[in-house]
Each structure stands twice: as structure tokens, then as C-alpha cells.
Amino acid sequence: MDPPSEATHEPVRATGSTSTPSVRRRVDHTASSYYPEIISILKGTFKLSHFRKNQLECITATLDGKDVFYLAPTGGGKSLCYQLPALCSTGKTQGTTFVISPLLSLIEDQVSTLRKKGINAFRLINTVDADQANDAMPRLRKGESLPLVYTTPEKLLGSNNVQDIVVQLYNQKQLARFVVDEAHVIGGWRVWRESYASLGILRKQWPDIPIMALTGSANMSAIEDIKESLALRNPVCLKQSFNRSNLYYKVKKKPSQKKELLKEIAGFIQSHHKDDTGIIYCLSRDDCEDVARRLREEFNLSARHFHAGMDRDSKRINQEDWSNGKCKIIVATIAFGMGIDKPDVRFVIHATMSKDMDGYYQETGRAGRDGEPSDCVLFYAYSDAMKIQNMLKNPHDQNNKPPPDEIQRQLERLSAVVAYASNEGDCRRVAILRHFDEEFDEAECHKSCDNCCKPGTVVNEDHTETAQQAVQLLRDMSNCSRERGIALTMFKDVWRGKKGATVSAYTGLPGYAAASKLDHRMIDRIVTQLLYSNIFTTRRTTSGNGFGNNYLEVCNFSLLSRLSD
Ligand SMILES: Nc1ncnc2c1ncn2[C@@H]1O[C@H](COP(=O)(O)OP(=O)(O)OP(=O)(O)O)[C@@H](O)[C@H]1O
Image 1 (cartoon, protein in one colour):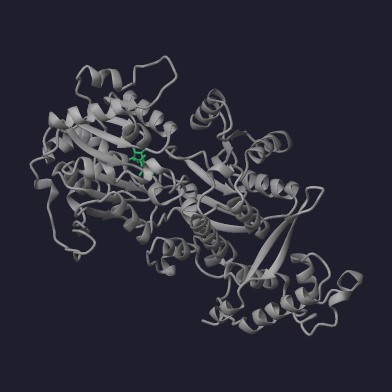
Image 2 (cartoon, helix red, strand yellow):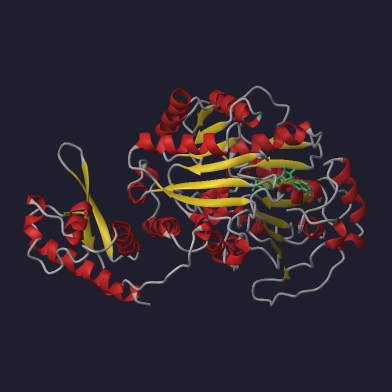
């Protein structure tokens, strides 16, 4: 992953605003007047021998007072890009670097790791513990000069005391830069989290203070969102390939019985990763606890759970024990991971699919940060997609329900994961990288995904006509049904031509048994495709006894022409 030496830096990729064409020019960053100090801090304080790709360019640009947008894969080394310049006394910027981070746990981790390295980092958050050794506020009030202060957007923008201090630093020319870490949050999972979305205020309030935005996951439209929301000014844009060549991607059909799923997971770990460290992602908190317990009790595996509903101490203990190897497997919701810097994670298993490709990339990206080969296995079931779809449409916390267009966006993101997981032919790496608008030649995969390892060549088949038959059949079934709706299994039974009393109402329809010669996996794929093309939809009803049913309906017949595109 690392480039060979400082002397071989790539030229700055693209300089200028989005409206300005990219300028490719060779810049020797080692010739800058800041370089001697930069290299001395790299070696002396961070104990590193050379920069990774784009790190020096990023550091030099921010010390020059420019805005920077920095995109690197998870584990790519983004933190150094703002931690190091914060410690520099040369450069056009002086004083405090404010790092804005979305999660308190991330802030706590970063600050304590830096303090252990002897770096003067502090936190500016609402703390409840008595230990104030890492708190910035009392020191800033006393007028102490702090190089690196981690905070949340809510604290930075919402507290008058903090605002007064920032004004004071600004007036004293001691406000070096704002760093927006995990910038994909701006356009991502909590776009309606107002404080993160309104970080554009920074530019309005402090127009001449440089801003650096960093993310490990953003495609072209997300990048534009971030630049626009933060009002970045002619940012220096530094991008790295998202390909993680040491990760092996695999999708497996998820068994419908949990017992079978656990057997498969445990079997995989015992045969491929005995004594290795790994992460298993589950959808719900209960599931995490149950899976961890059963892996311990039934398979003798060293597993613990982690989710946001645990008390602080239990979370800390489980995370620490996993980090230092006392426990090998952490079974977690997506609450686990941001900011985790464990290099030797050898496998990431998704017991349930992710809600979007960004999440999937981030979560799998926690494997193999040391560059060594590691496995990423996703257990996919269409029923999980339906479950997540229902959760997105009907969130538990109705008061925090996103607006309808945001829900629609989330459903579209989910459909990208369904398309990825149900694709049994194309290179996984091509699909993942396409999500980040990166073109990738599948020959470069070198058989490091399940689809590229399959024998034979991929055959393209056109199933438009079959899909049209399916749509007609569902319409006919809905017209003659006396039930409350057509359940998915009933539809498939009729299409396949099942015999018996349960389907007798539909055996006279022209589409009955039309798919009798189709493989059941192909039937599933066509129905999935129709659902995710918004031609079919599902309607959920809850009966008096509290049980829910999903009924299949034709939603938009006119979209059917899209299938033949
Ligand atoms: N120039 C370098 N040489 C060697 N190791 C480096 C270098 N830069 C960073 N690292 C190491 O790489 C690891 C990942 O760095 P970092 O935590 O900054 O990644 P990141 O890009 O922020 O990833 P994520 O988004 O997943 O948090 C760390 O252990 C860090 O010490």
C-alpha cells in the first residue's frame, strides 16, 4: 500500500474548483520551505519513515493556507494529514486546528491515542467523567495555545462559550484550520443531522480560515455535495484508488435457519481463520448478543458482542479485549468500527447485508489494514433486504423519521447492495469501485473475488419477456384474488406451476406455470430485479394478532420498458 519513498510522489491530481479544468503539473513538495520541519515531525514525533501517497501534498497544501479535499480508502492514513500540520510552526497557518468529528467515541479514542504518543491533543465535548486531563475548555479559557482540538459539530456551532473562544483565537490570528473528518456524513446516513449539514457556516463566519475535508468513502456526487456544503474554495483535491487489493470478496446465500447460518459462519472461521481476529456484523442488538453467545457456547469460539445499547464500561471492556487480542471475534452492529485502527483484522463477515454500498465498503475496509490478505464474506438473503426496507420506511423512532425524499434515497442505496449481492457473474471489485465512480479492469482482480473464481465464462441472457410475463401474471392474480393481497410465495408458486388446493384459484390464468422450466434462483433474481426497478412493490399489512404480511403488487407497469434498455 505504501509508495516506496518520499521522492516518488505523484503530481497533484487536480487543483482548482470543480468548474476549473484539472491542471496536471509536477510540484516538488520536498522543495517547500516547510519540508524540513514536516519530515522532522514525521520521523521524530510519529516515528514513521516515509509518507504514503498524497499525504505530503495534503500537508503542504494546508500549511499553504489552501482548502483540501482528501479522499483515501479506510486505513489509508488520513489522520496524519491534519495531525502533522497541526504541530508545525512553519507554514502560513498558526495556532489551533479544530478537528470536527461525528462521534464522541471516535474523539475519545483519537485523543487518548495521540496523548499516549506525547502529542498535545485535547477534546472539546460535553464530558461527564471527572477526568479532565484531556479537556480543552479550561486551557483555552486560560489562553493556553493548543495545537489540536477535537470537537463535534454540535459543540462547535451550538455553544456560545466555544464561539467566544473561536472568535478570540481568530482575532489573535491563532485559528489555524478546520478539519471535517468523516466528511461523508454530510451527505450520508444523517443528512438531516442539522449540525453536520450546517458546517457551511464555518466558511461564512471565518472566510479566510482553511478547511480540510477528509473521507474514506464518497462517490462523485457525494464529493460535490461535500464541497458545496462546506463551501470549499478552489480545494486541492487528492484522491486515491479505492481498490483494496488484499481483500477477498465473497457473497454467500444466507441459510434461512439461524442454526445453519451459525454453523456456516463457525465452520468458515474454524477452517480458514482459527485464532484470527475478525468482525461479524449483524443488523440488530439482540442478534449481536445471541450470535456472540451461541458462537461461544455451541462452537467454543472467542466471541463478544458490541452495540450502541450497551453501557459505557461493557462497551469499553469488549472493545479493549478485542483490540488487544483477549477476545478474537467481535459481533457488532454498525455502531462498531469508526475509528478502530486494528491492523490485523483477518475477516469481516456480514451476517446481514449492509444498508448501502458506502457502509459495506467502510465495514469490509476494517479488514486487512496491515495490507495482508483478508476475507470479506457477505451472507445475502432477499428477506433481509425486505426487513431493512421496512425498517427504513417505518423507523422505530418516528420522531426522528427522515423526510420522504431521504427515505427514497436510502431505499435506492439499499437497492445498490441488493444488485451487488445478487449478481453472480460480474467481478465484485468492479462493482464496488464503480460505486465510487472508479473504473477498474476485472483482469486486475486476479481472482480475488468469488465471481472471478467461478469456472467458465459469463453468459449474458435477456429475460425481458419472462419479466413481462411475470408482471402480467401478478396483475391477473390481483384481479381475480379474493384474498387481501398476493403473498410473494403464492406468486412464485403460481408462476412455477405448483399443484394443489392453495393455488387452485389461479390455475386457469394464462401465466400459470409459465416459469416451470426456470431455475428457482433465476425466478428469485427476476422478482428481485422487478422489485428494485420499482415495477413490483410490496405492501405490508399487520393483522389483528400483530403478525405482519408482505403482499406483492405491480407498482409501475410503464417502467417495464426499462428492463429492455
Ligand atoms: N506514512 C505512513 N507510514 C506508515 N503507516 C502510516 C502512515 N500514515 C498512516 N499510517 C498508519 O496507517 C494506519 C491507518 O491510519 P489512519 O487511522 O489515519 O487511517 P484512516 O485513513 O483515518 O482510516 P479510517 O478512515 O478507517 O479511520 C494507522 O495505523 C497509521 O499509523
